[in-house]
Image 1 (cartoon, rainbow, N blue to C red):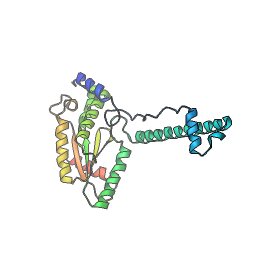
Image 2 (cartoon, helix red, strand yellow):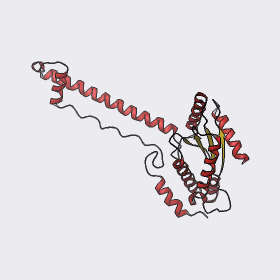
Image 3 (tube, helix red, strand yellow):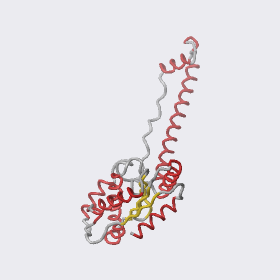
Image 4 (cartoon, helix red, strand yellow):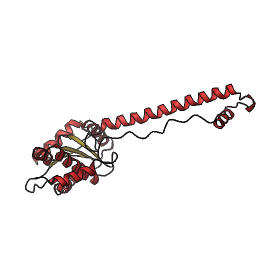
Length: 242
């Protein structure tokens, strides 16, 4: 039986924080408050910059400049809000709904980029697939909440062991994909063995099951310009043959 207290403690910690630091959906970036109306001194400064003599700054000219500056400030603020919202939408579209990683669509895009990089630079890169089998067993045994805790913990462990140029994504179900940029297949397999040991020894992932391996993994070299789905199938075949 899973240690539910340990899972609860992990979830309570894991669901906090901003994207990249904790878990959960991306949050919109903060936008500055709507600007206040310009002061009379600021209007005079603007008039001076525009070359309007102080003697010609009548109340009507002052009011016209004030309205113009308020309109410009409002448009600038709306543009900033729109840009921040666009950034949030793009990030949300790429994010996995549970884990702080790319979703499958975004991961496929990054995998295509990696294959193009291999073709352009003739430097090796590799793909790993990690199938967290204990996630499925945990869901059948203890429910979806415990399965989520297993996957969250797995993503956290893998993410901490990756380099800045590597890419981590959720492939659906209980599988994670890892793009190891500028890493040859032999080194990728060593990485897979190390990650399997780290994940298999974690109590949240192990769920008290000592006799059953908690995961399986497969690796594949990323060929020059190869299709993302072809690469995923190649790594999945290696996983199934393990």
